[in-house]
Image (tube, rainbow, N blue to C red; front, top):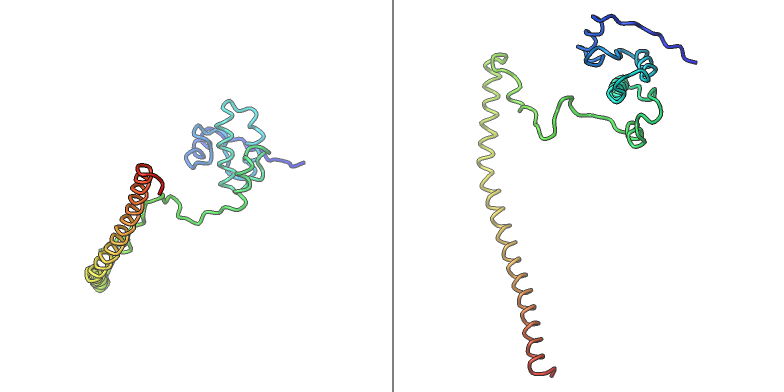
Length: 180
């Protein structure tokens, strides 16, 4: 049997842990480490709001990489299997569809020397010039491809309409004048 160390926290310690996100907002269920996690799991049965306490314990278990200590059934089967294989390689706090700052805006100019500023300005001007010169080629290529696609589309639609019209007219004539 595992012996769990019990620590009692005074009100000031609980407030401090809540501020550091190591306890629930009111200071309840402080979880600083794995030992505190085990204590919280044991004390779960005495909780008034069991759902909130369970979510809190699961959150802290994930943060401490100790989800294996959670009782059976707290994490559903899909989540348990995903926890074994999924890892996050993103940037903490990054949101979907939000880009990082450009490489030129990440350093304030006051931290750069005159030579570094000139070098960056020169690079930005070269990139703008390249984009301006290259855009004509892209537009010409896009126009050529659009022309080819629209012509072949017109031909395909014309052929389909012609075939359909011939079929309908032929059927109407056969119905009107017999099946000769």
